[in-house]
Structure formats: structure tokens, C-alpha cells
Image (cartoon, rainbow, N blue to C red; front, top):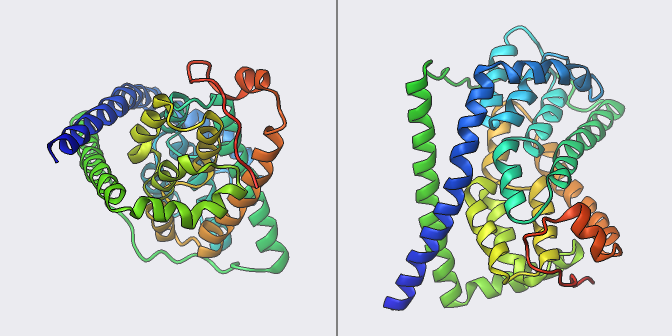
Length: 326
């Protein structure tokens, strides 16, 4: 028992240090960029892009804020802009799916890099996937005349207090919450492993994960990322990737899955507060993820190792191992 607690303590320390060393510098850099007006410039650039998915240009600032900060930041900008911009439920659903796929990229793309996935792959899947799924949903809702009624907001948040001190306290609270989640998560995983539940979950999910090219060793980190997200599960993902317990192509497939579908409970509930419809932000997202990954991993499975090392994975990760497919 003492050995188990000692191992758990080491895991908590390693995961926490790894994640915070990555997150804290990125958070500071992002804040500096915000103060310099980088988000507004990105919003201006994205304005014309938003028209391609049936959204007004003003929503470019919402998505830009979400990309640079997180979904909460994008929601605050949305609540401010929507006072003068009336959107339909379909439009809010399209905007929400884009926010779900591409948010907090400075932090989460860095986590994916540390787990071994090149930045270009993450950006392609998250930004490209957001635009593709957004366009699909826009044309689907428009063609069938669905969700065209004006959105009705049932709640609006209070605007955060201004000033650097308020921002610093907010970030500190977020980091403390992440630390608590890490402790609870790793403890729960240890208990599930001891009593055999982890293996049972792996067996149940094995057919689904196999179809999208993820081996059984990556089951746990995939579940963690899908349910809790990259910010909470990022330290564990990096730890497993570096430990060599999971084949590199399984890590890659898992991270590609998490690029387009993570934190599926919390984030989905968040965007529903905006007025988004469940048909797009949950079912559409799940179907899109399943089809995309099933095709993507099989195409890449035929690529030689040299292509993987040059374009897909970071060289500091251990040698490749073949992925198991159906």
C-alpha cells in the first residue's frame, strides 16, 4: 500500500510539473499579445472567413478570442456583441462548433507538440476541421431550413473585473483547479486499475477505438482527454507519450482524435448556454470526428516512417511502432 501511494505521489508531481511548466509561460505570452491588440487584428483577419460559414464578420472577433484564450473568453465577447447582432440558432450552432474545435490553441497545441504531434497537424485538424464542419452544418441547416429562428439567451455572465491583479487571481484559481483535478484524476485512475475497471472500459471501447486507428494501450489517455479535455489531461498525455508505454502511432491517433473531440461534457454544456443546438455541437461533432479519424488514420498508415518523422511527429519521441487496425 505504501508503495502504491508513493508511486501515485510521484505521478502527481511529474504530471503537475510537466503541465505547469508548459502552461504558465504560454499564459503570460498570450496575455501580453492580448494587451498589444493581437486578438483584435486576428478578428479582423477572420471576419471575411466567417462569411463562408454563414456568419457575420463581427463573429470573427469571437472566434479569434476563443482561439487565443479559451471558450470562456469567446463567450464573453459573444455576449457583448450579440446585443447589436441578432443570430439564428443555426448560426450560433455553427459558431459554437468552430469554438469547440479551435480554442486555447497556444496552450493546447503546445501540449500536443510535447506529446509528439507536430504543430502543423494540430492546426490543420483544429482550424481546418472547424471551418469544414462549420461549412457542412451551415449548408445542412440552410438547405433543410432548420434552426432558422432567432436565438434566445436565457443567461448572461457578469463581465470580469478589469486590471492585472484580477487577471492574475483568475489564472491562479484556474491553475489550482487544474491541480485538484490532476490529483483526483490520477487517484481515480489508480483505483480503477487496481479493481480492474480500467481494463473493462478498455474492452468495451476497443471496437470503436480500433475503427479509428487507436490501440488498446492508448485507451486511458483517450478517455481522459475526451471527457476532461487537454488542459486537465494534458500532463498525463505528455507523461504517457514520453514514457514509451504507448506506441507512437497510437499516441498520434489519440491526439488527432482529441484535437477535434475533447472535453465533450463541459465544453458542450458551455456552448449550449449561447443557444447552440445539440444536433450540431454533440451529434454532428461526434459523427464528424468518427468519419474524419477513420479516414485520416488509414491514409497515414500507408505512409513511410520517413514521412511521419518529417511531417507528422516530433523527432524527440521514441521510434515508431505499427498501429493495429481492423
